Length: 171
Figure 1 (cartoon, one colour):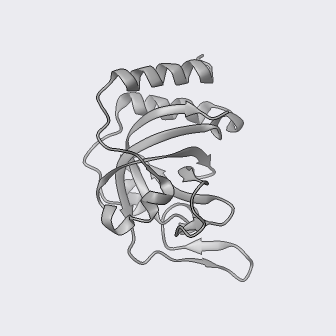
Figure 2: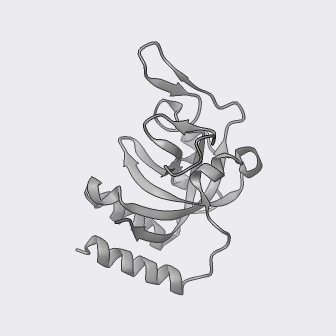
């Protein structure tokens, strides 16, 4: 079984030797500031990859305090999905599948212990979907709910994954 460091070197070399990048990756919080403009488009977003109870997210926690859509206790994040999940989430149907090496990378990351996954930064290339009227509200019990994506509709956008690039481990 590959260790995290061996796996990251393998994926990094594959990415470097593979096709050139299509576009510059945005931080998640920068992506969130351009939702209307990027809705339905292929985007590249860079952030920390985390697996939650019901799926996975890409997040940034180093954004300007005035940036919109910060989730309390999380930071700036988008929900991630594979093409087969897009319809069930209300996202636009993707006209692509996850690239094979990217799917294997995601499978490997899912098997890592949570402590190791929380230190993985990567770029996700995929199709972004958002709702024009996203709202996040706090219930009388103190929980947050929204009308977006993921559990309790907390995330203002979903990125349907086409490729995973530039995986590195944070110290």
